Every structure is written in structure tokens, then in C-alpha cells.
Image (cartoon, rainbow, N blue to C red; front, top):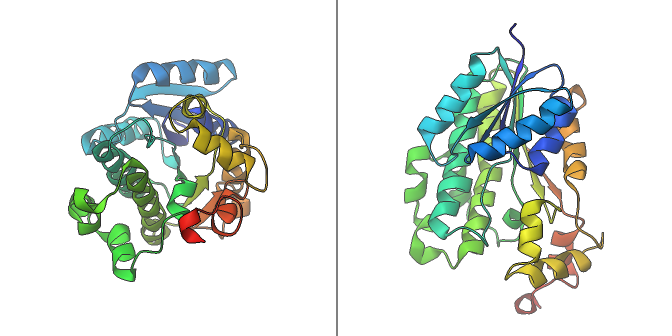
Length: 279
């Protein structure tokens, strides 16, 4: 029996929270670089009544991404995409961040746009980090948005001498995600499909808990203690917005990014989180 297909990359808590909102009565293909993660997530989802198949999918590999999409097409029309895959600036080197979060996301959005069904919709999870950087030039923004995927990593602003550290690489990757979504929205729109991004702040997940207990733990704890919300967020709060964006109620929303960070970015620019160098 063929069904509408939901492709879901990154078998973490945020992706699962979104998939549980929108994945009923669909065939769900969940892909993760670690097959065992996808398998564990699939079992949880199956136990809640969802039809889920786990696959191995490496976001840094175009061939792996294409195989992921092809697996979805075996089951029916691809009508939804959730991209929640990525690596963290505390746990990955600069080259991995650029290859996965920047290049890989660009490839996935482009390739998914080729197979998305008319009326389809996608969401990619970016980060508040993309909103923390100083503005890039108009030319640099356009390069991040429109450069062919295989030429992205050759851009001048992405060369090692222009990247300070892993956090800066992560910020550049997430800025690229936002710009790429805007450019892809134009292409997806030609098929009557939509694509948006969400930029979460600190959200409690197993990965975030590792961060809280890691070398940048104090930085993250200070961030959510001094943001207007006074706490970290939850995966379900991200899913609340994703559900709107991926439903008919969000039919006029495409090419947009939604910052969901408890006001941390506002505090970073205009409150107690403002770096001393900005004062």
C-alpha cells in the first residue's frame, strides 16, 4: 500500500517531536548517520502507532542523501521533509561542521526539492547561532544562498584563515541554512511546495545535556538563565511551531526562518547576555 511519505533526517528529540505531530497516516523514513540511533527511534515511534522505517544516512554525503530520498520514493509521493540532522560546535571540528551542517543541509534541501510532491512542505532545523553573527555583505549572503552545492566549501569566507573557531564555523553554517532556505523556497514554489527553517535556542535534549556537562556548560547555563524566558526550551515547543509551518494554517509561509530561543538573542544584543566587546 502506497502512502504519502515523510522523510526525516536526524533521529533526535526535536525531529521526533515534530514527526509525532505530523507523521500519522504517513510512511516515515528516518535516517541517521548511526543506524542504531535510527533503529531505536523507529522502535519508539512504532510503539506509538507510526509506520517508520530506519535507514543509515550521512548528511555529509550526496550519494547517501540521494539513497535516503530514493528509499522514500519507493513507498509513495514524498510530501514532507524534516531535517533535524547536524553536529555541535563542542563535539565536531571545523571541517565536519562545514561538511555536515552547511554543505550537507544545502544538498539535502536541493535534492529534496527535486522530488517533493506538489503541495509538499519541508522544515530544516537551524540555530540561534546564525542570528548572533555580524551582518555579512550582500554578496556573501547571495553566495551562501545560491552557490552550487559542490562549490560552496570553496567560498572565500569559508576558508580556514577566515574562520576563528568551531563556534564561528557553526554560525556561518546556520547563516547559510537560513539563506539557502530562502533561495530554495523560490525553486520549491515552482512545484507548489514550501520550505522554512526554525532556529532554536537552548533546547533540552540528550545532546544538550552533554553540552551542559561539557567544557561550554557554564556558557549555556548562563545563556538560558539570563534570557527573558529564564529557562531552556523543550523539543515540543519547537514542534509547536513546526506543526503550524507544515500545516495548511502555514500555507502563506515559505522561505522564512523562525527564531525560538526564549529571547536569548534579544538579550545577547540588548540585555545581560551582551558581550563586553559590544558595550
